[in-house]
Image (cartoon, rainbow, N blue to C red; front, side):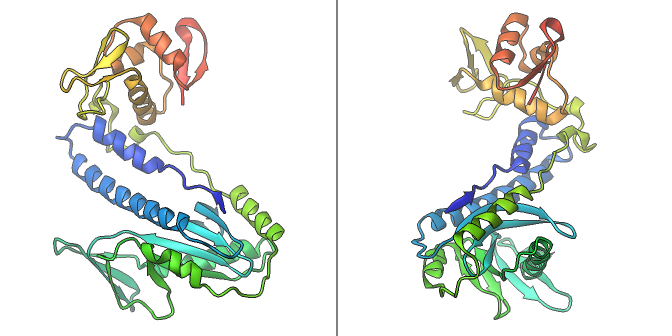
Length: 313
């Protein structure tokens, strides 16, 4: 049973905003592209895990929670958590290309990418050990006694893992149904009522981040950000308002609500309320009444009235 679904990645959305609004000549654009690729790969790995979990005929009682961020001695994040009557399983999902070599002394992972580049990274084994410890402490502070176990999940068989400790369970995503089917059902420590109580406590304890405006980072100054309505058809800016729709002069795609993405882009960039004047500048239109209607119909929080009206996410 899915108790908490996977959240939409705010980080991925912010990177996509930057790819639309940051000029390609800007010094930070190349890094944004790389970060977007990494974030997309991570999300793809999680989606693949979710697909195979949905296809798993789990015979024992369980509650699954995705994207769980908690605070123990420090904040820690868990990709997926499964509560069973006998323990809590943490699934750490990794989608990295190339070869992954796990090393001791010091503990780290060397990733050899497909292009031959070698990068030293924090070892997922160390990350798993820390998460087990932190979740155990979090449970202990609430007088909850339940063993914590972890599984490292690699998204694709093209990932090559070397020197993984024998004590660490490692599977590929497609092996998840068989892994769950073959789990030994152990004597119950928790009833379903207690499992649900723990799931509720995990949700109640979630750390909710209040993201800062993108342009609060000095790497991304607001004055260089590109204006204009974005076309989802050809990924260009500059759709024009014609007869109640937005039309792309480049590819001819027509959209009734393309302005919504552009308004949201700007609110994420600045974090400041959107006024009618600023919205006209961003959308590239001069019609005050049109923009008033577009803002009023959008799913935004409004403060003030008439010319003093302002809108926020």
